[in-house]
Length: 399
Image: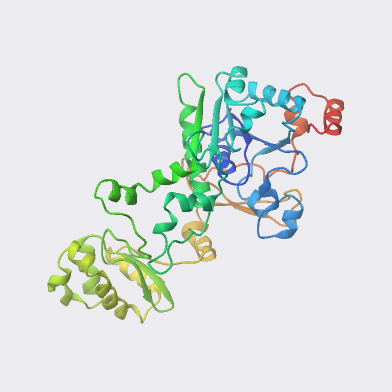
């Protein structure tokens, strides 16, 4: 018998688009929640048209959609139509959570704001994800991941003195916003008196995860800067050139520095006052880097990583995404799921599960990403709408 998942029995209405909201609900689905994706008739989630494969985009099953919508059900509702709003309220009465990432005020203008919906179901957890939150001087500004990366300061500390400001190479603000929302929802589900409104600002969520860098400014008065591949808290710690690539070495403790120096034939530096303490090594980090890289040039990153880790010096090759996915450390732990026969897709769909294990197993969902509106009969039928009524609603543009 399969053990129950933490969120078995929880119903989530996913009214979100693109990434932050869908990613939040992706976490909840894998933890056992029934996630019903409520999409706009005819077009659905914008992510259905996004991704690196134009043919899939044209079919409404873009890679960007496939990436975080496995295990969900899909229905469509025209919320500008009175009947569509009525049906949503009926769904809310049987739901535990509603997640939306419309611009602030949109749901209120539709007559579907948190006060209205929580009047239908006082135990509803209503989670709104937006770029800047539900109030403040930027409340009406549109926001995408890159905008948030810029205004949060992330870009100012990414890259080095020549390349910064630089965008992080994946949608980090959307992803952090989604994880923050999922954490808040899971916490709210545990409240003795369930029911609340959660306001997730992607800007604040990102800043909260920058605490290590931000606190250097708030507490020590040191403004964060762009230091490239250098770890400014210690030395030698960063990415070092070697044969054919880069190897990350993090000799952050004195004993690790001593092991590294001896292994590289640089034990003379252990008596050099320029490198005697952590602060000395930080102050002279670039000279030290040159000395170390001169000793690394005859072996590959993977060879150095094996040798140094065996000595207790943390090290790792800098890999590409395909190399990381193919490595047994990732490939053998169940992170990647594969779904056959996904509608509109002519190949197996391989996507990532959440990076966690429960009792030794990676959480999984049974079904792949849904076609637009695929679950209308099941979901709306449970509300008492028969086939004839659903056909009429479709003709009227409600679903």
